[in-house]
Each structure stands twice: as C-alpha cells, then as structure tokens.
Length: 235
View (cartoon, one colour):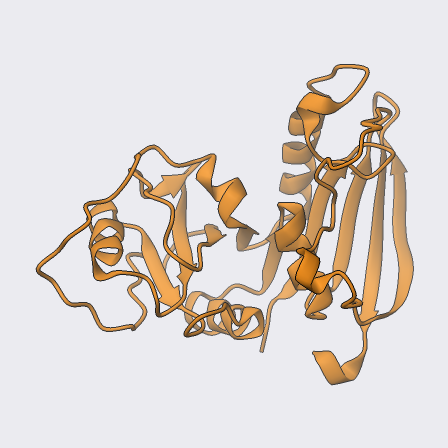
C-alpha cells in the first residue's frame, strides 16, 4: 500500500519554479511554500537529488572503505514525527548531517551505490534503503515508506524532474499549487513538471482532475488544490 501523495509547489503564473528569476522580485515564494507545507501536513516530504543537494553540508565521502555492506535497508530512526526523503539513485550527495530542520533524512538508492558511500551515510546517521538495481522503482519506494516508516501522507516537493517522474508513474493523488503574481518569461527555466528528453513523448496517465479548493492568499497568490484520478492500469 502506498501513501497518499500530494505534489506541493509554488510557481509563477507561467509555471516556473526558480524564484531568483521571478519578476517582480519577491521573497514570498519560499515563505509561502513553507506555510502551505505546514498546512498540508503529512509524515514525510520528498525531493529529488538536485534539490536535496542544496541541504548538504559535506563536499564528499571517502572513496574507499574496508567494509562491505549488504544491499539491505539501514534505518537509523523509525520514531520520527516526519522524515525528509531524498531520491539519490547513484549516491551523489555527501550529507554531513543527519536531519533537515529536525526531520531525519532517508535516502533512496539503487544497488549500484558504492560501499564507501554507504559507509559515509552510516557515519552521518542518514537512513537509506534500496529501490532498484539500476533505476529507482518509485512505486516500490512508496510502499516501503508506508510499510516500514508508517508514512500515510507524503508531500512530493520538487524539483520539476522529480515531480514529473511521479506524475508519469501515476503516483500523484493531489496537486497543491500556489500561483504567485510573478512571471519568469524565459525559455529553459525549471517548471513544476519536467522530463528528460527520453521521456518527452511519455504521457502522464491522468484520467481526471477535480478542483478540491481554491483560496486567494495575501499578496495576490492563489492556492489551487486538485484531486487526480490516474488510469488504473498504471497504479
């Protein structure tokens, strides 16, 4: 059984998510994101590798270790009120910390990650588990989070490639999108949902979207919440 998955983002009116490019200039995006994140609730939030890297405090783990680690889950904590989940298929992030804002970090890896990286994660007290040999199996990862950590409600919160992967896999149940009164207006800026070129023709299996709520927020932002129904064959 998977958690109820909410994709939560704050964007410009043209669907761009890099706040530094927005005009007029504003700091509202980050603050608004956090306030709505709290209102949405949940036992965990999840980001991709690029977003996760922004929280890292170390530059790299050692290149060698004498240890050999089985490709089995290693969970430093199971009793947290909330977890910060990061997709890092190939073990690129050296954390130098065990939590983000008090939420213990849990990294989702593939079997290809080196033993030296696993040693670094353990030394930092960062939990991890494996969800595929070469590529991440997102559906399995969600089932693991529900079964092993009791995650019943998960907020997927970027970046655009990460969001797009969950969307195309038919795993998003709700979209929470706050649209700010700003524009980006340039080609190539990251969007709420993105894909690599190889997936450009792969369509999301969204069969229906229904508006659950629409709220006008201070400063002219509009908070939209849509419930998704995905094609049964993909979920």
